[in-house]
Structure formats: structure tokens, C-alpha cells
Length: 242
Image (tube, rainbow, N blue to C red; front, side, top):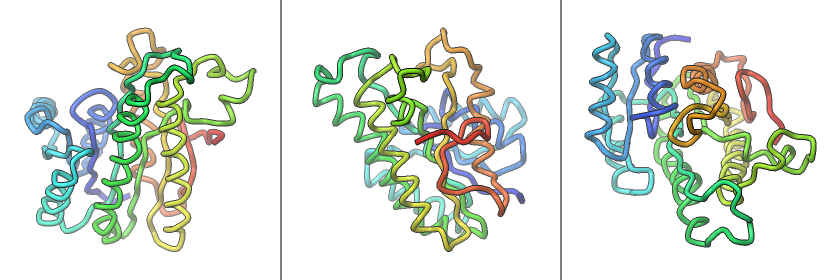
């Protein structure tokens, strides 16, 4: 896979930042996007101290004008986008809150970022991804979005449920399937990634995986070869059940 132009949303910290680091080490042109432009600049400066080059971008996935400005900026600078990694996401409900007790405001806020923001960014950048010879779209999902595993009493996540967050990731997975189907006759590949339970602000210090490993699935899907999969849900190259 030749050197690519790769944009990562929510890339100023956590898994998004580590994904940017690993892709920059591979020599790709990485666009570090964050809602707060100053935080994106700080992340790029940190990469620079490691000898890695990246570009900072302001991109609020919940702001149509911000998305439009980012698209125009990428178009003017690069003329195309080879990979879009939809990494930005939120979890705004407490783990273990009963589905019947999850406030409607939480449902709306979580879906606004995790689903509607992701779709808005993808729709806006798709014309630039179409200009790539081998476009890739990576939707960072979660195993918590797996209906199969949530319904299976023997699965490791059966007793770990957060209705709004889990449902938002199931919606992301459904969008992945539909978009991959729409683009099946093109060179563009669309996949969902489960990073794993990682030591981040979201995963907590008790998580078993380090951030460096949490980024590996997105890095792989961002640089898939021509014979790579599309329309799938993966963790560490293993296919997960929907």
C-alpha cells in the first residue's frame, strides 16, 4: 500500500492519537482532526517531538459548518482523501444503567455524535474518498454493538450493558454494512473496527489492553490491500459477529 492521506476524527488523544502515531510512523500523511483546534495542534506538536509529521485540523463532527470547512481544507491541500477513520465518539451514560432508566437526553446526545456525526462526516468526505485509487473508510465501533453477543448468555459481554451506547455502535455497524454494499462495485472498502477494551478515558485504567494495541485494528483497516475485506466487523484481523 503506497503512502496515503489519512484523516482521523477525535485524534487528539487516546486510540485516535495512537492510530495517528502508528500511521505517521509508516510514512502516511496523517490529518489529526479534533473538535478543539488547539488540542489538534498540541497532538501534532507531540508527534513532531517524536520525529513524526502530521497536520492539525479542526473538525467538530456535530457541526455542519465545521465539517464543510474541513472538507474544503483537505480538498485544497490534497485534492483527495485515501482513508477516513471515524474515530470520534462518546459514552455519556453510566455503565450498568438499566435500559428502562437511561434518560432520553443521553440517547439523543450519544447518537448525535456516535451515529449522526459519523454519517455526516462520511457523507461530506465521500466525494474526496472517491478520488482515491483505493479509498478506505474505517468506522470505529465496539464489540458492545454486537447483537449476537449481547443476546448470548455465554458471551463475555452478556452482563455488561449500556443501552444507548451499545445501540449507537450497533447502528454504526449497520451503516457500515449498507455503505459497503452501496460501494461494492468501487475500489472503496468500508469496515467497522472494535479496538478492544483499552486503557483510555473511556475504557478506564482497569482495561486489559494498552493503547498501542487498541490502535492496531484501525491501522490495519486503514491500509487494506486491494484483496482486503469490505463490509466486515473486525478486531485484530478476526471477524466479529454482528
